[in-house]
Image (tube, rainbow, N blue to C red; front, top):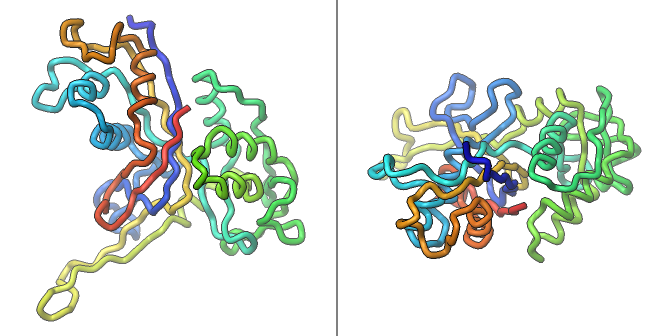
Length: 298
């Protein structure tokens, strides 16, 4: 058994709508996004995240093969050294009567996030709150509050203080660190809203982006028969997290790429930290700008 195992968190912030699809669906949307079976929260399957990381990592092919595993043709040679978990929801943007939009989350999501963070050794000094039905928790000086109420889409919640510690932690530890994200780090401090679990689930189910797509016949400029469909996407400004587990390299010592002296999980994590891009494209519709994300590696 390999005891040299370490886990880090990869936070994914969407800069444009992201469509990680399931193919055709039975719902009103023709091309829905991936969701967890039990909670119906949006997610991105680990294979999709791992594939995007591998294909867009700027590194020699032998190093990528050692880290992520060989291509399908040589798949029997050895396994990869990293396991990439599904990307799970952390913050979901919802239209707000005040402050344009709010970053929403819920106790269930925060409990899962804290569990993952503590498992990787991150310092987490906030407690998972409880939120009563019809109420929500906000930060001191919240910019999305009006007369002690918050209106998200068409739904009103009584606002109470209690989200400051979580908002500060998200801004300081989780959001991307570049200067271009200074505004967003400040926004989460005054726009975070912690909803009851059921209300949050309703928003992530019913408030995603749904667009109608058509295919035009070039000569007649009319819609081609059967070429009218709807497509769902996660909105921009969604925050997700994926747990990335590193193990020792599984290539033989004689085939170990130069950057790896011992092939330990520490070296694997160091390689990921040095070679992961700051931005990535995940999901479909790459040529129309969809799926642009910023990464934060903890």
